[in-house]
Length: 442
Image (cartoon, rainbow, N blue to C red; front, side, top):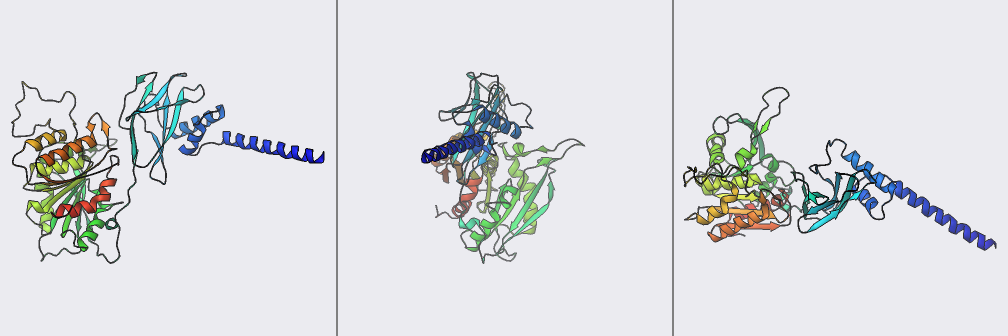
């Protein structure tokens, strides 16, 4: 009997501890999307739903309208390069709310009690993305700039890391530049990199211009470190690099905000930006340093709109640049739907770009231009790049590569599974620079 009672007591204690553990689990407030994901797994208790509701409301406490689906997705990254994405939407109690993404993916959202708030959390691996929209009772909500996200993680090449014994060049922050000719009223920050091997009495240095300059001379994948290592190893020639930010128009008064001029400079497919460099900024560099005058010794590099801008500069001014590196280039259609030329009123000269031309037109122009222009082009993009109303970035980079191949241009197209960022481009920057300066390497 004593054995029976002892055993029963042990069983009862075990059950009570189990119930207590379950209760603690049910009532534990989520601290991140991983916790929220666990609480949303079926069967979902009322306690779990309330905890998830409180968690999302806290994370979105500054958001005024959660019913339009235009707010940012919550993202928590994981050590493997992937991460969790959390969606939250306000609808009417009892509605059917589903998140739809490309490639036939969909995730039904769970209503949190009878609050009319819906949530779902999904785990994504490294090198994945989603361009999504919400559907409420079968009606698609409008998408905006935040209806996309992605995950990517690349390892840095040895040339992207500081190496012992490698002399370091100087990165000089120049005084803020005020344009007076091409972009009057704009002000921009810029930097000049001078390698340790540069000598005023030696051969003229090559020239590299980076659009969105601060992104390349600071932080991870720093191009100055890459240049230090490659020049020291004699894998590329001695090169002076100029890192130039897009212009901003200062605020006009108290309480006003500055205006960014980036799209006007980078997405306008004319010679204006190259002429701006040639007439306004590069003369300052030429006065201080001996730089080769040969256009084949001049490289321009950038990412996204800065990448398509780099191609535009070389396409229109082969007398200035004949080498191009473009990462996730925005070779897309930036025209508004009512911004196409009228067939009857089109007076734009056939030998010039009109203001309605965008980088989306380059593949056709490359194919039709004869003889080919003296350009060497490096392209990079990932198949998880953007896909929105402006176009599909990856497909448009494929169109660029196909056109360059058709017309016999010296080019290299590196593909991956990255998203719309410069991370992959920075990771392959050492390879790109070695190839772009050496005709026999690829």
